Length: 411
Ligand code: SDX
Image 1 (cartoon, rainbow, N blue to C red):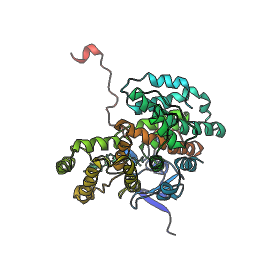
Image 2 (spheres, rainbow, N blue to C red; image 1 turned 45 degrees about the horizontal axis):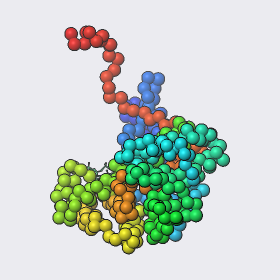
Image 3 (cartoon, rainbow, N blue to C red; image 1 turned 90 degrees about the horizontal axis):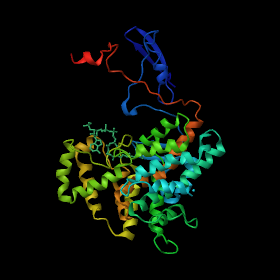
Image 4 (cartoon, protein in one colour; image 1 turned 180 degrees about the vertical axis):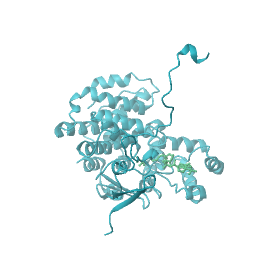
């Protein structure tokens, strides 16, 4: 075994440093020893967007971006999507009624409030209903909050959906499975008992499993960063929801559908692609920081599309999406940048076929991802190596200026 170290020579001083290599990384703290003096800080790592920086050790989710591999606790996503259920996967990742006052809070939003804004506010508000959740190292208290939040997310998501339609809220029906219950709270009307189509609840199980976790993505990083201040899990997860809301992250599924509608027909695809290549906009649902190959989740979702369309009829936007994918996968611009369809490219077509408006799509991402966020949060709280997140910066501003009183500034 070769010596697992780096020898770094600081040419400013001629000094050499031996840096230990562990798990393919060197510690930033070891780099910090290079060039450190009384007056000078040592070397730091400058890595906007953490493109090449590990922020934690984790045993929850494994991704191989070049081979398009995704595993939860070592189980391939393909097998889980085929044979497991979302709650079983949530339990695997990690091993609930909503308070009536929260209902009043939700009713206070405008009729056209974006459901992600309602969701992130309501989840943050949950921290005020369960102050005991601040005991983040008490395993029993922690377990109760985790179960509570995973149970409440579908209710909050469904109520945000019903709020936009001015429909009464439907309460959970414990005779139904997690996804059947979610469909009931979304779509039940005057019937005594909602009878979900098993093909649709199965499709939602698969989508929820695929969205449950994804290593150190933007929203998980937000949960970990906010969680590193020892705040309660509701507040940390509301930070994750806020990050997921963005169109470059979870908001991409909504953006994909709007993009497909804007393209409108296959004939418009070539001019749209030209616009993308000119940098006028992005091909939403394509590209990924880690996957430089086809996102394995997109492959599975593409199959689930057919199952759902058996029930709902084919979404006419499907053929625009398929033609867009075909052209992009042949075009040098996308090939050279290793841009492939990601999890968001096809999911929106299913959600629209299930009668969800585009603004609900990212809520459908946040509900299952709550299991992953909470699993990552627990791992963070239990990780003795973790500290409060406080990155350094490269200062580019002015220094030691003398204050000039206002009356002299424009003299
Ligand atoms: C999710 O991290 C995760 O795991 C996230 C996620 C999860 O499960 O949590 O997988 C969920 O967020 C999936 C991604 C959804 N977002 C989108 O589909 C939005 C469109 N895609 C992008 O904006 C972009 O691809 C990102 C944000 C996903 C990744 O961006 P990177 O890794 O920071 O790459 P980059 O912006 O540096 O782009 C590299 C090059 C650039 O071109 P050049 O400057 O080299 O000329 O690729 C180009 C970019 O312009 N590029 C795109 C593009 N994505 C990247 N060009 C056109 N269309 C795109 N979609």
